[in-house]
Structure formats: C-alpha cells, structure tokens
Amino acid sequence: MPIRYKSFFLAALAAALLVGCGKPVQSKEAVQQGLMEYLQSRAGLDVKNMDISVTAVAFRENEADATVVFRAKGATDNANSMTMNYTLVQKDGKWSVKGKSGSSEHGGGAGHGMTGMPGMTGTTGMTGSPVLPPGHPPTPEAKK
Image (cartoon, rainbow, N blue to C red; front, side, top):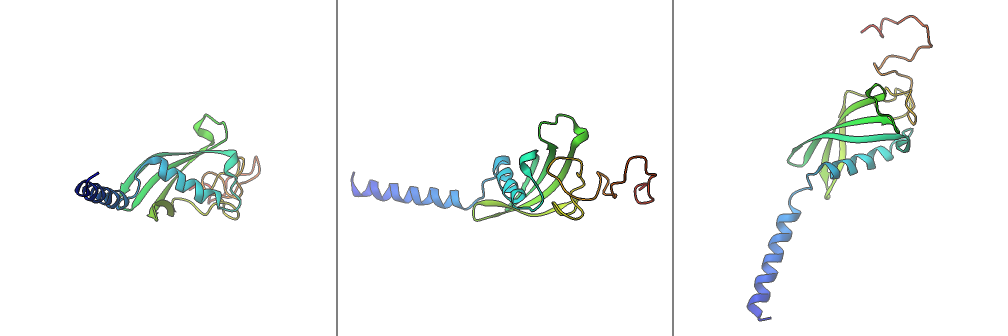
C-alpha cells in the first residue's frame, strides 16, 4: 500500500475514533445495564427475585431519565409492580445512577414501598405508610 493511502487510512481511523468516543452510548440497553449494576450493589435488595425493566428513557447530553418497573419474578399483573424514576449520568462510557425521585433508598429501613414483594425489605407499604396488620384501622398517615 502506498504511503499516501496509509496516511489517509490512519487519518480516517483517528477521526472515526474521536467522533465515536465523544458521545455516550444512548440506548435503553446501556441505561438498563448501568441501572442493574447499581441495583445489584444495594444492600437488602435481591434483584434475582424481581423482574426489572426500563420502560422509557429520555436522554439529555450526558444524562438520562429512566422510568423503571419492578415486579415480583414471574408476576404479570400491575398490582404487584412499582414504577420508579432514576436519573443516570454517563461516566467513562458507562451509565451510573445519579439519583432517583419519588422513593426512599433501596433495602433496609424505610424500604422501597414493596415489602410484600420477594427480595424486598422495609417497613412501608405501597403508599409509603407503615404496614399494618390485617384488620387494623387506617392511621391518619395512611388516609393521605
């Protein structure tokens, strides 16, 4: 191969690498992978007993807003599901969770509001109110 073709090939290759490396992978699958890495690192959250799916993603430069549905493994009804919104940020070519809205931390303590689902721990129900024994009258907090 003549030298001028080699130079052209190397310049084209360098340009392609610069263009490709400058922008994060903006796909639902890449966001789901970053979210799963985050969830698997959370104490008290057994992701093996849940079906977790990213249902929508909106990208903004190096951030993404994801809507995530959690269900008990194998559940098909929406009665045993919960939807969470997460904000992820792109770092070093990967998506990492920056924060979430409308919930407390995963596992332990206040929980996710999914105490009845396998793999979830906590002391709150779907409304965020304390879980009361069957037949217990509603508390003022539960009436909100």
